[in-house]
Image (cartoon, rainbow, N blue to C red):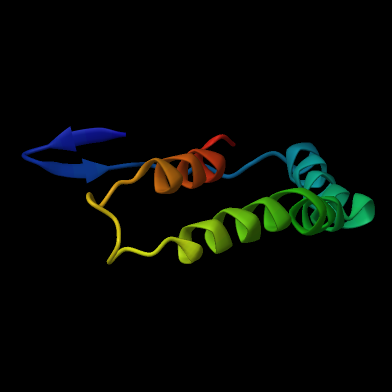
Length: 84
């Protein structure tokens, strides 16, 4: 890419036939492996329950009775959600 007077210029060149086939195989691989199912399982079993616990702990804090907006209970719950 080149910049001339603040404008970007780029020349796109055709790809060789053998590279096109390898690229399409690379795109099909995630669908064969179904990687998204592993991510969904990880979300449902690990991250979602941790997030729900932390959010419920945050919601259970009575803000009106708290001397400061950041009480130790809130800080500990916030630390849980930011660990990962």
